[in-house]
Length: 82
View 1 (spheres, helix red, strand yellow):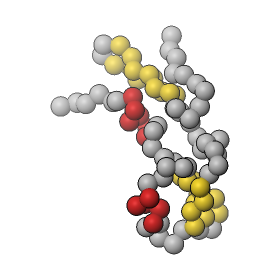
View 2: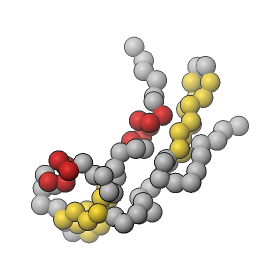
View 3: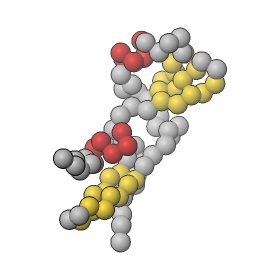
View 4: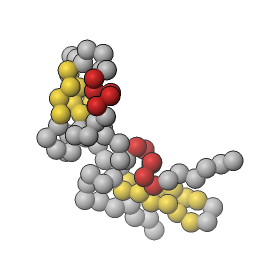
């Protein structure tokens, strides 16, 4: 059966993010899963001081019976449709 998206799982909005910096250096958000950080294949992990180094998302899905909107909890934003 077809499953509808859940707002909290949309694009991994609540998951800790990471990004490549240079060479073997990877920048991670606070809360990055420890199991992943200890098995990072030789990469140097740097924990970010804040969230402004990572992207954000607002999204709206059109459903059969209405709309579903989500907004990234890291930003002062909202998903709005008209």
